Length: 398
Ligand code: BGC
Image: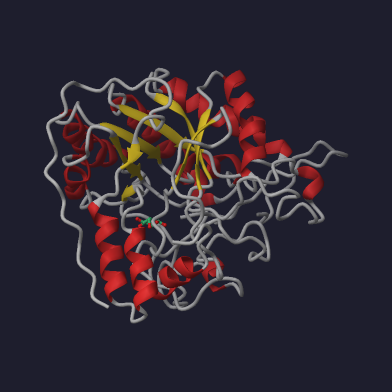
């Protein structure tokens, strides 16, 4: 995922929208899974869905991690790795094939936990980058609806007693705010808007809480992007009929920004004067009121999965497999901010952001930058060396 995090840097002097610039995407055994006791009643989520629920450690990620741990020779590091398998993370449904895993991700969730998934298969996906171009071409909205969203909804409807949190379509609407000049994003625009609106409307079930992706501080956080960003999201939210189960936005998904580092990582950059959202806390504080005045719910969840180490990126917009990164704060609803429902791990740490193979169709030059880890496999594929690096650099340590 991730495109060119072009900011609309409207010059304070001219008030003209400048062309977007690339500112700123020993042997180990599996734990036994206890059979779930039947939950008594159907779930109706209102308020912070994470307040009394731990995020479910889905089997897909925990088995990736368990096999990664078994490949680590150093016993102490291998033991630390197994602990990562206990962290609740989001399961990405990034193809129609992955719908097979949806049921597995929700059927054993204990009553005091919440399943977490990412809806990510829009036609013309990742319009401003190449690394995560998806399976559905531009124009296949009908397939997105009937072959992707509808079957997922049908599975969710079988589990009304399970609480579910969803991140909706990372990068899509933010790309329409800042990369609208790219032909690929122009082509994708109506499919993104209609597709996200359809998803929000159909997924609006009582046991679900939805968070629409809102990029991060180095993307929609630019002073001149805050309002257009909120307007874009709110327009789609309203087109969906203002679904009750939309709670707000997800920020820093698969991102690297610190939560409250001050001064912020890029606060000394020459363009910093145009961005007050120098960390994610600031971004949420600035974006949330804009969402509210645009008529949209404004709570946030913030991805802290890989943001432990700062000062690694040459530019804020570098998004691919940042070298030197570490696992960040574990998911918790104790965020210290009334605007943030939970810190979450949306990007499963160890899965690649994009290939560094320059001959691959989905090779994106951001994955070849000096500050990107190499070699790296295709987006979503496991990178053992990267996982071990995240583990070694984790803060807090495992
Ligand atoms: C990839 C997806 C993958 C997700 C989580 C995205 O960048 O495009 O295929 O599921 O990351 O790793």
